Every structure is written in structure tokens, then in C-alpha cells.
Amino acid sequence: MSLRIHSTLARALQPLVPLEPGHVRMYVCGMTVYDLCHLGHARSMIAFDVVQRWLRASGWRVTYVRNITDIDDKIIRRAVENGESIRSLTDRMIDALHQDADALGIERPTHEPRATDYVPQMLALIGTLQGKGLAYQAGGGDVHFAVRKFPGYGKLSGKTLDELQAGERVAVQDGKHDPLDFVLWKSAKPEEPDEVKWQSPWGAGRPGWHIECSAMGCALLGESFDIHGGGADLAFPHHENEIAQSEGATGKPFAQVWMHNGFINVDNEKMSKSLGNFFTIRDVLKVYEAETVRFFVVRSHYRSPLNYSDVHLDDARAALRRLYTALASVAPAPVAIDWSVPHAARFKAAMDEDFGTPEAVAVLFDLAGEVHRSQSREAAGLLKALGGVLGLLQGDPQAFLQSGSGMDEGEIAERIAARAAAKAARDWAEADRIRADLLARGVALKDGPGGTTWEAV
Image (cartoon, rainbow, N blue to C red; front, top):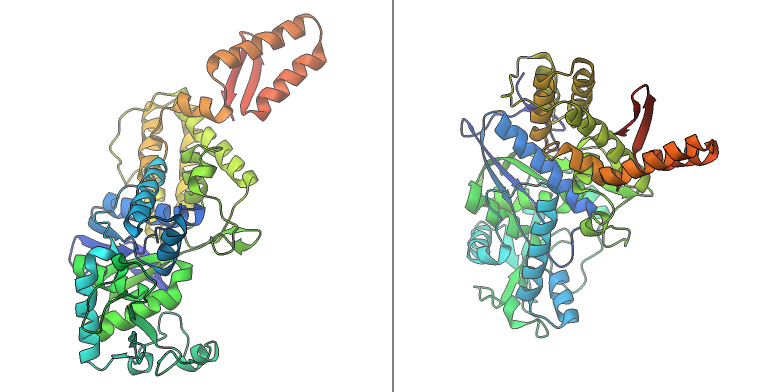
């Protein structure tokens, strides 16, 4: 079966047929680097990391672009508040982004362009749009895209111009021809730092947000490419506007497939900085292993909402321990994945159906059960190899199991000895308390003829 992807634009699953045979070109909207990344950002990064991993595992060459927005109103405001330069702030936040992404096992994209390096391409694109009558300069100096002059506007969101108009405030003294028109170039404000002012045919200023991604995508992947991705909150207006300005300039489809990952929710609300209900990646990693966080994300389908809570992360940790327990019990043999064998074939079928990671993870648990039953090194090897396709199960099993319990083997042995002493003294309450305490920390005891053994749960 060929890979099928749910396209927001088509509102259906469609086969991936790369424009260039054997080569998939993918653009994903990245972070605006004014603060630390939160778990919502982690979800998007992990989702598209899994996508590019599966594309490569399927034999395609992949060019993966994930941009960095390093010029924006929020960035300017934060830098001014901090009393530092824009570049100092964005450099720090990009370094923090890389640290967080590396911890979560997210592979670096092929290209990670910074918006400020592509201002000439943005100016050229705006000039093309103006030459085609799709852009105009307003009285205040800003350059806007004329939405009603692009016939396909609304095709991604599925909304008509009249529906969109109903949700817009009437333009007041901003020089727009229509409230729906969006900014391509922002004229410089006297109070803004000089480092965010570029010269242009329309005067000094800086680019609008939407034009950045169109310019970077065209420059690095071409005027048409295969996959464009990002969070569901970007579908409108950001991606709708990208389509309008890109296709308005080139006359070509910007992307063949539009993918959007679901939100991470807290109390049924999207996790976001604007709502103040976010948890930074690094704060969560102080409590949970990075692989536990990755597993928490991967075991849910990328398009579904994902509810954050300590209970769900605890459950993810316990489930990941079960997989590592299988690898700890039998040393995995090095294997090359044969996609025709039953477990691998099921895994492939799941991933080929819109990156169905829940079903793929279920295959890993079935394999873990087989490892326990058969003690087969080949089954353990396949478990590790398939896990690796998702960026999982590549660590040392014992190290993960010990980190998961928060105890090393010496500590566990001491607690087992203390329990044995309590039993010898017929202090059954103390013996039960030690067993219960160990179980709460992820260590299950088993009493047998040869003595007491343990395993992580």
C-alpha cells in the first residue's frame, strides 16, 4: 500500500506522489523565537520528525525545511523589555530550542532558515505581487495583499469571503482597502530599533509574518513542493495567506499536501503562551525522561487533540517501561527490517495510513509480548529497530528502567534485603509497606523458590 496522507486542503486522504520521483520536499512552520519552547511546540516538532523519519524509512530522499521566525512584534517587545538586542535574544532562544529538540530526539531539519536572512527574497515576492495588482501600499506606508483579487482565497479554511468578512472588524484609519487584506511589509516605526529596519521600494520597514514563509519555502524548495505542515492553529490565517501570496505570485500550487497537527490541551484549552497555561519543555524534562515525553506524543495520532497531565505522562512512562523491560530481558540481535514479516508489515500498514502511530505502537507491544514468551533475540532486535523508526527504544534498557524508578540496582537490592529482614522478624506490615513503596516507584517484586526478583513496570 502506498503512503496516504490526510490533506487539510483536500479534506481527505490522498496518496503521496512527489513532484520529483524519489524526492519528498517538506516545509514546516517553526518557532517564533522570543521565549522558551513549550510542549505544544514539542508536539509539532515530534510529529513532523516522525513524518520525515517514516519518509526516509520508506526509501524517499527528503529535503526538510523548518524555519525560524526571528523578527516579529513579540520579539521586538521582549528584547526591549530585556534591554538587549534582537539578535542577542533570538540567538539565545534558538540555542535553547536546539537543546530542547536534541533532548527529545528530534533530528535537525535539512535546512533551518532564519527569516532575517531572506528579506531580499521577500521584497522580490512583494514586488511581483504589486506588479500583478495583488498588493498595494496604503497611506501609512504598509504594503497589503488585496484578498478579494485572489479568486481562491478561503480554500484551505473552507470559508467564503463573506463568512470571513463577518468576523473582521471594520478597518479604521489603517489604509486597508478591505478589512480582510493582510500586511506584506510593515513601515518602520520611530520607536523601533534600527536593527529591525530594512530598506525597500516602499521605504524602511520589515516584512509581515506570512510573507516570510512563502519566500523561504520558494527559495529552498521551489515554487511548488510536496508537503507543507504546521500546527492546526496556523491553517487560518497564516497558511491561507501563504497560499494566496505564493500562488498569486507564481500561478502554481504552493504545496500538494497540507498537514496540520492537533493541539496539546490543558483543561480542554489549547496550550499556549497567550493563555498562560503552558509548560516549557525544559520544565517538564526536570520531572520526566525525554523519551517518556516523546512517547507520550508519539502514541497519539498527530491530528488528534492530546490532553496534558501528570497522570498521562506517568502512564506513558509505565508503558515505555514495559517495552524496555522486554529489551532488558533479551539482548536484541542486530536486524535489518524485513517489511514482509508480519509484525513489520502491520507496522508499515499503520504508518502508511496517515502516519498511524497508535497502531504502530500497538505492534511494538505485541512484539514485546513475543519477546517475553519466546526469549527470541531476533524478536527483540525487530522491536528495537521498529522503535527506532519512531525515535524510540534506542537507549540502554537498564539505564532507562533505573531512571524511571528513580532508584539504581543497589538501592533496590537494599530495599529487598530490608523487606526480607522484616519478613524474618514477622513484621508483615513493614514488609508490605516496602513492597508497596517499591511498586509506587515502578519496581514490582516477585517472590519465588530462588528468592525475590524484581522488574520495572
